[in-house]
Image 1 (cartoon, rainbow, N blue to C red):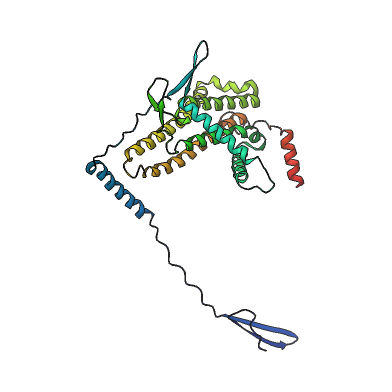
Image 2 (image 1 turned 90 degrees about the vertical axis):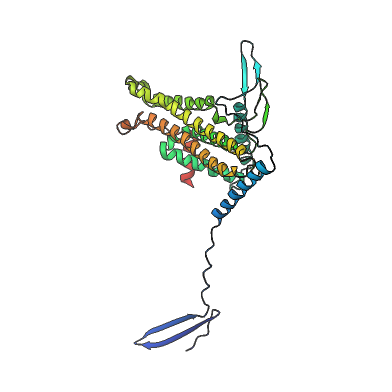
Length: 341
Protein backbone atom coordinates (compact mmCIF):
# COMPACT_ATOMS: atom_id res chain seq x y z
CA UNK A 1 0.00 0.00 0.00
CA UNK A 2 1.36 3.40 -0.98
CA UNK A 3 1.06 6.12 1.64
CA UNK A 4 0.98 9.73 0.47
CA UNK A 5 3.65 12.01 1.94
CA UNK A 6 2.59 14.03 4.99
CA UNK A 7 5.61 16.37 4.90
CA UNK A 8 6.71 18.53 1.99
CA UNK A 9 9.47 17.26 -0.28
CA UNK A 10 9.40 13.77 1.34
CA UNK A 11 8.31 10.36 0.06
CA UNK A 12 7.13 7.59 2.34
CA UNK A 13 6.79 3.94 1.50
CA UNK A 14 4.89 1.64 3.84
CA UNK A 15 5.12 -2.13 3.30
CA UNK A 16 2.86 -4.31 5.38
CA UNK A 17 2.76 -8.08 5.59
CA UNK A 18 1.19 -10.41 8.07
CA UNK A 19 3.35 -13.28 9.28
CA UNK A 20 1.95 -15.54 11.99
CA UNK A 21 -0.36 -12.86 13.35
CA UNK A 22 2.42 -10.21 13.64
CA UNK A 23 2.60 -7.07 11.53
CA UNK A 24 5.86 -5.96 9.97
CA UNK A 25 5.96 -2.30 8.95
CA UNK A 26 8.89 -0.70 7.25
CA UNK A 27 9.01 3.03 6.61
CA UNK A 28 11.67 4.64 4.50
CA UNK A 29 11.98 8.39 4.32
CA UNK A 30 13.92 10.14 1.65
CA UNK A 31 14.47 13.86 2.21
CA UNK A 32 14.63 15.70 -1.07
CA UNK A 33 15.89 18.94 0.56
CA UNK A 34 19.66 19.26 0.18
CA UNK A 35 21.56 20.31 3.32
CA UNK A 36 22.47 24.00 3.26
CA UNK A 37 26.09 24.74 2.66
CA UNK A 38 28.08 25.81 5.74
CA UNK A 39 28.87 29.52 5.71
CA UNK A 40 32.44 30.45 5.08
CA UNK A 41 34.31 31.35 8.28
CA UNK A 42 34.61 35.07 8.85
CA UNK A 43 38.06 36.50 9.08
CA UNK A 44 38.94 38.34 12.26
CA UNK A 45 40.29 41.70 11.21
CA UNK A 46 40.76 43.08 14.73
CA UNK A 47 44.55 42.92 14.67
CA UNK A 48 44.66 44.47 11.22
CA UNK A 49 42.45 47.36 12.36
CA UNK A 50 44.62 47.92 15.44
CA UNK A 51 47.71 47.96 13.23
CA UNK A 52 46.12 50.48 10.86
CA UNK A 53 45.18 52.75 13.79
CA UNK A 54 48.72 52.55 15.17
CA UNK A 55 50.25 53.44 11.80
CA UNK A 56 47.82 56.32 11.29
CA UNK A 57 48.53 57.53 14.81
CA UNK A 58 52.27 57.62 14.22
CA UNK A 59 51.79 59.45 10.92
CA UNK A 60 49.39 61.93 12.54
CA UNK A 61 51.82 62.60 15.40
CA UNK A 62 54.67 63.28 12.98
CA UNK A 63 52.53 65.71 10.99
CA UNK A 64 51.26 67.33 14.19
CA UNK A 65 54.69 67.95 15.67
CA UNK A 66 57.11 68.32 12.76
CA UNK A 67 54.98 69.57 9.86
CA UNK A 68 52.37 71.75 11.55
CA UNK A 69 54.68 72.59 14.50
CA UNK A 70 51.77 72.43 16.96
CA UNK A 71 52.52 72.16 20.69
CA UNK A 72 52.06 68.89 22.58
CA UNK A 73 50.88 69.25 26.17
CA UNK A 74 52.99 67.43 28.74
CA UNK A 75 51.55 65.23 31.46
CA UNK A 76 51.17 66.72 34.96
CA UNK A 77 53.56 65.63 37.68
CA UNK A 78 52.31 62.62 39.62
CA UNK A 79 51.81 63.14 43.35
CA UNK A 80 51.78 60.23 45.79
CA UNK A 81 49.83 62.22 48.38
CA UNK A 82 46.37 63.61 47.69
CA UNK A 83 45.99 67.35 47.07
CA UNK A 84 44.04 69.65 49.41
CA UNK A 85 41.04 71.39 47.88
CA UNK A 86 40.02 73.52 50.87
CA UNK A 87 40.16 73.53 54.67
CA UNK A 88 37.49 73.93 57.32
CA UNK A 89 38.56 75.48 60.65
CA UNK A 90 37.49 73.46 63.67
CA UNK A 91 38.74 75.72 66.44
CA UNK A 92 41.81 73.87 67.66
CA UNK A 93 42.69 72.47 64.22
CA UNK A 94 41.73 72.51 60.55
CA UNK A 95 39.91 69.85 58.55
CA UNK A 96 41.55 69.46 55.13
CA UNK A 97 39.27 68.23 52.36
CA UNK A 98 41.25 66.52 49.60
CA UNK A 99 40.39 65.54 46.05
CA UNK A 100 40.45 61.85 47.00
CA UNK A 101 37.79 62.54 49.65
CA UNK A 102 35.62 64.10 46.96
CA UNK A 103 35.98 60.98 44.84
CA UNK A 104 35.09 58.81 47.85
CA UNK A 105 31.87 60.78 48.39
CA UNK A 106 30.97 60.52 44.70
CA UNK A 107 31.53 56.74 44.70
CA UNK A 108 29.36 56.33 47.81
CA UNK A 109 26.61 58.48 46.30
CA UNK A 110 26.70 56.49 43.05
CA UNK A 111 26.26 53.20 44.94
CA UNK A 112 23.42 54.57 47.09
CA UNK A 113 21.58 55.98 44.07
CA UNK A 114 22.03 52.76 42.08
CA UNK A 115 20.60 50.47 44.74
CA UNK A 116 17.91 53.01 45.61
CA UNK A 117 16.78 53.05 42.00
CA UNK A 118 17.04 49.25 41.76
CA UNK A 119 14.85 48.67 44.83
CA UNK A 120 12.40 51.56 44.39
CA UNK A 121 9.80 49.50 42.53
CA UNK A 122 10.56 45.88 43.28
CA UNK A 123 8.55 43.13 41.61
CA UNK A 124 8.41 39.35 41.78
CA UNK A 125 9.75 39.14 38.23
CA UNK A 126 12.82 41.41 38.28
CA UNK A 127 13.79 43.51 35.35
CA UNK A 128 16.18 46.30 34.50
CA UNK A 129 18.17 47.63 37.44
CA UNK A 130 16.50 45.27 39.92
CA UNK A 131 17.61 42.28 37.87
CA UNK A 132 21.16 43.62 37.72
CA UNK A 133 21.26 44.38 41.46
CA UNK A 134 19.89 40.96 42.38
CA UNK A 135 22.45 39.26 40.14
CA UNK A 136 25.28 41.14 41.86
CA UNK A 137 23.97 40.39 45.36
CA UNK A 138 23.36 36.70 44.61
CA UNK A 139 26.83 36.26 43.15
CA UNK A 140 28.50 37.91 46.15
CA UNK A 141 26.31 36.03 48.63
CA UNK A 142 27.18 32.72 46.99
CA UNK A 143 30.87 33.59 47.17
CA UNK A 144 30.72 34.54 50.85
CA UNK A 145 28.56 31.60 51.94
CA UNK A 146 30.71 29.18 49.96
CA UNK A 147 33.80 30.28 51.90
CA UNK A 148 32.48 31.11 55.38
CA UNK A 149 29.38 28.95 55.61
CA UNK A 150 25.78 30.06 55.62
CA UNK A 151 25.51 31.36 59.19
CA UNK A 152 28.80 33.25 59.40
CA UNK A 153 28.61 34.23 55.73
CA UNK A 154 25.36 36.10 56.19
CA UNK A 155 26.75 37.97 59.17
CA UNK A 156 29.75 39.31 57.29
CA UNK A 157 28.09 39.57 53.87
CA UNK A 158 27.32 43.29 54.22
CA UNK A 159 30.96 44.12 54.97
CA UNK A 160 32.42 41.99 52.16
CA UNK A 161 29.88 43.22 49.60
CA UNK A 162 30.41 46.86 50.60
CA UNK A 163 34.19 46.57 50.27
CA UNK A 164 33.94 44.89 46.87
CA UNK A 165 31.39 47.31 45.41
CA UNK A 166 33.13 50.41 46.76
CA UNK A 167 36.59 49.41 45.53
CA UNK A 168 35.19 48.40 42.14
CA UNK A 169 33.16 51.60 41.73
CA UNK A 170 36.03 53.84 42.83
CA UNK A 171 38.45 52.08 40.47
CA UNK A 172 36.15 52.20 37.46
CA UNK A 173 35.17 55.82 38.06
CA UNK A 174 38.80 56.86 37.87
CA UNK A 175 39.03 55.90 34.17
CA UNK A 176 36.18 58.15 33.10
CA UNK A 177 37.57 60.61 30.51
CA UNK A 178 38.54 63.88 32.15
CA UNK A 179 38.58 62.42 35.65
CA UNK A 180 42.13 63.50 36.49
CA UNK A 181 42.57 66.12 33.79
CA UNK A 182 40.17 68.73 35.23
CA UNK A 183 42.29 71.16 37.24
CA UNK A 184 41.26 73.75 39.83
CA UNK A 185 43.03 76.12 42.20
CA UNK A 186 43.70 74.20 45.38
CA UNK A 187 44.26 75.27 48.96
CA UNK A 188 47.83 76.31 48.20
CA UNK A 189 46.79 78.34 45.12
CA UNK A 190 48.35 75.92 42.64
CA UNK A 191 46.55 74.04 39.90
CA UNK A 192 45.67 70.55 41.11
CA UNK A 193 43.40 67.77 39.76
CA UNK A 194 39.83 68.20 40.98
CA UNK A 195 39.32 64.44 41.23
CA UNK A 196 41.80 61.79 42.32
CA UNK A 197 41.09 58.03 42.51
CA UNK A 198 39.96 57.22 46.03
CA UNK A 199 42.11 54.09 46.22
CA UNK A 200 45.16 56.03 45.00
CA UNK A 201 45.24 57.63 48.46
CA UNK A 202 47.12 55.52 51.00
CA UNK A 203 44.97 56.92 53.80
CA UNK A 204 41.87 55.37 52.22
CA UNK A 205 43.35 51.93 51.60
CA UNK A 206 44.93 51.91 55.07
CA UNK A 207 41.57 52.73 56.65
CA UNK A 208 39.88 49.83 54.84
CA UNK A 209 42.74 47.50 55.82
CA UNK A 210 42.33 48.50 59.48
CA UNK A 211 38.59 47.85 59.28
CA UNK A 212 39.32 44.37 57.90
CA UNK A 213 41.97 43.75 60.59
CA UNK A 214 39.75 44.70 63.55
CA UNK A 215 36.82 42.80 62.06
CA UNK A 216 38.60 39.47 61.89
CA UNK A 217 40.02 40.10 65.36
CA UNK A 218 36.49 40.69 66.61
CA UNK A 219 35.20 37.44 65.11
CA UNK A 220 38.22 35.59 66.46
CA UNK A 221 37.45 36.80 70.00
CA UNK A 222 33.77 36.03 69.51
CA UNK A 223 34.57 32.49 68.43
CA UNK A 224 37.34 31.63 70.95
CA UNK A 225 37.22 34.29 73.64
CA UNK A 226 40.49 35.44 75.17
CA UNK A 227 42.20 32.34 73.84
CA UNK A 228 42.27 33.98 70.43
CA UNK A 229 45.19 36.14 71.58
CA UNK A 230 47.28 33.25 72.92
CA UNK A 231 48.77 32.69 69.49
CA UNK A 232 50.26 36.19 69.63
CA UNK A 233 52.68 34.96 72.28
CA UNK A 234 54.57 33.76 69.25
CA UNK A 235 56.00 36.92 67.63
CA UNK A 236 55.72 35.38 64.17
CA UNK A 237 51.92 35.29 64.42
CA UNK A 238 51.83 38.92 65.51
CA UNK A 239 54.12 40.00 62.69
CA UNK A 240 52.07 37.97 60.22
CA UNK A 241 48.80 39.62 61.20
CA UNK A 242 50.31 43.10 61.15
CA UNK A 243 51.77 42.33 57.72
CA UNK A 244 48.21 41.75 56.50
CA UNK A 245 47.44 45.41 57.09
CA UNK A 246 50.47 46.47 55.07
CA UNK A 247 49.81 44.01 52.26
CA UNK A 248 46.12 44.91 51.90
CA UNK A 249 46.66 48.66 51.91
CA UNK A 250 49.91 48.77 49.89
CA UNK A 251 48.69 46.37 47.20
CA UNK A 252 45.50 48.29 46.49
CA UNK A 253 47.21 51.68 46.70
CA UNK A 254 50.11 50.69 44.47
CA UNK A 255 48.04 49.13 41.73
CA UNK A 256 45.46 51.92 41.67
CA UNK A 257 48.04 54.71 41.78
CA UNK A 258 50.20 53.07 39.11
CA UNK A 259 47.21 52.49 36.87
CA UNK A 260 45.96 56.06 37.19
CA UNK A 261 49.42 57.46 36.43
CA UNK A 262 49.71 55.18 33.39
CA UNK A 263 46.36 56.32 31.96
CA UNK A 264 47.09 60.02 32.49
CA UNK A 265 50.63 59.81 31.08
CA UNK A 266 49.50 57.84 28.04
CA UNK A 267 46.65 60.28 27.45
CA UNK A 268 48.99 63.27 27.33
CA UNK A 269 51.69 61.31 25.51
CA UNK A 270 49.22 60.24 22.84
CA UNK A 271 47.30 63.50 22.98
CA UNK A 272 48.21 64.29 19.39
CA UNK A 273 47.05 60.87 18.17
CA UNK A 274 43.37 61.47 17.48
CA UNK A 275 43.03 63.24 20.85
CA UNK A 276 44.32 60.28 22.81
CA UNK A 277 42.35 57.63 20.93
CA UNK A 278 44.90 54.92 21.66
CA UNK A 279 44.43 55.51 25.39
CA UNK A 280 41.32 53.33 25.18
CA UNK A 281 43.60 50.30 24.99
CA UNK A 282 44.89 51.09 28.47
CA UNK A 283 41.38 51.92 29.72
CA UNK A 284 40.35 48.35 28.91
CA UNK A 285 43.25 47.02 30.95
CA UNK A 286 42.32 49.29 33.84
CA UNK A 287 38.75 47.94 33.80
CA UNK A 288 40.14 44.43 34.19
CA UNK A 289 42.70 45.35 36.85
CA UNK A 290 40.08 47.34 38.79
CA UNK A 291 37.88 44.24 39.00
CA UNK A 292 40.83 42.06 40.04
CA UNK A 293 41.84 44.46 42.83
CA UNK A 294 38.28 44.61 44.17
CA UNK A 295 38.12 40.80 44.20
CA UNK A 296 41.51 40.48 45.87
CA UNK A 297 40.75 42.90 48.70
CA UNK A 298 37.29 41.48 49.44
CA UNK A 299 38.29 37.80 49.14
CA UNK A 300 41.36 38.26 51.36
CA UNK A 301 39.22 40.01 53.97
CA UNK A 302 36.72 37.17 53.75
CA UNK A 303 39.42 34.52 54.18
CA UNK A 304 40.96 36.34 57.17
CA UNK A 305 37.60 36.51 58.96
CA UNK A 306 36.82 32.87 58.15
CA UNK A 307 40.18 31.66 59.46
CA UNK A 308 39.85 33.75 62.63
CA UNK A 309 36.42 32.29 63.36
CA UNK A 310 37.55 28.75 62.53
CA UNK A 311 40.81 28.75 64.49
CA UNK A 312 42.86 31.75 63.49
CA UNK A 313 45.41 30.13 61.17
CA UNK A 314 45.50 27.50 58.47
CA UNK A 315 47.23 24.82 60.54
CA UNK A 316 44.59 25.12 63.28
CA UNK A 317 41.57 25.10 61.02
CA UNK A 318 41.09 21.33 61.27
CA UNK A 319 41.70 20.99 65.01
CA UNK A 320 39.52 24.00 65.88
CA UNK A 321 36.55 23.97 63.55
CA UNK A 322 35.02 26.92 65.36
CA UNK A 323 31.52 27.42 66.69
CA UNK A 324 28.33 26.93 64.77
CA UNK A 325 26.97 30.46 64.65
CA UNK A 326 23.20 30.44 65.21
CA UNK A 327 20.97 31.83 62.52
CA UNK A 328 19.09 35.05 63.17
CA UNK A 329 15.29 35.25 63.14
CA UNK A 330 15.30 36.63 59.60
CA UNK A 331 17.56 33.79 58.40
CA UNK A 332 15.30 31.19 60.05
CA UNK A 333 12.24 32.78 58.45
CA UNK A 334 13.92 32.75 55.04
CA UNK A 335 14.89 29.09 55.43
CA UNK A 336 11.36 28.17 56.51
CA UNK A 337 9.87 30.00 53.53
CA UNK A 338 12.33 28.32 51.15
CA UNK A 339 11.60 24.83 52.52
CA UNK A 340 7.85 25.46 52.39
CA UNK A 341 8.10 26.63 48.80
